[in-house]
Image 1: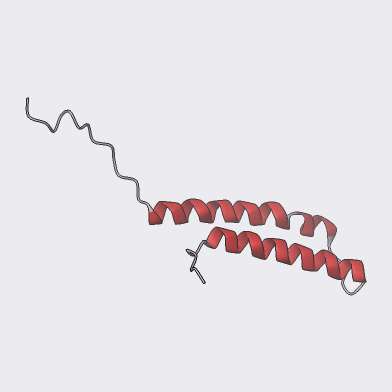
Image 2 (image 1 turned 90 degrees about the vertical axis):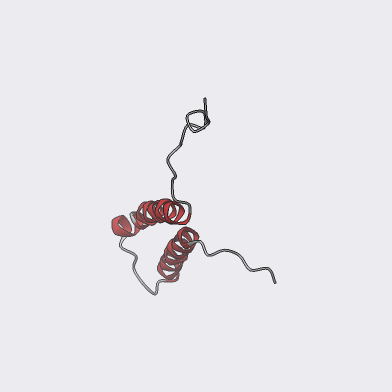
Length: 76
C-alpha cells in the first residue's frame, strides 16, 4: 500500500466531523442530550483550527525564501 504524507489539518477536520456525527447520533438515539448552541459552534471552531494548522504546517514544511533579483547578481 502506498504511504501518504501526514496532514494534521485533515486529521483535525476528520476528528471534528467524527465528533459532530457521534454527538448528533447519540442525541438522535436519545442516549445523550446534545447542547445545541455549543455543539453548533464545534464545526466553525474545528474548521478554523484546521485552517490555522494547515497554514502553520505549510509554512514549516516549505519556508518562504525571499525573492532575489537575478539581474543584479549577473556581472555587467
